[in-house]
Image (tube, rainbow, N blue to C red; front, side, top):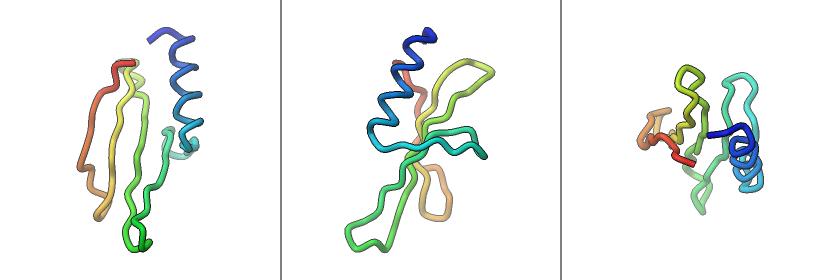
Length: 72
């Protein structure tokens, strides 16, 4: 991903409701069930060693139940 593509990618996830978590160096949005009893986190995180972005879904006791490398 070129630097311009990366800027566009980050802008697109922010526009979809993600916020930057400085502590964990990742972009996060929280999904909550209709009754508000359960929630999961959708996370985008850059892998600095490979310059790739990873998407993860985390919930149910902080378990990663979905993970994928993003090809933008």
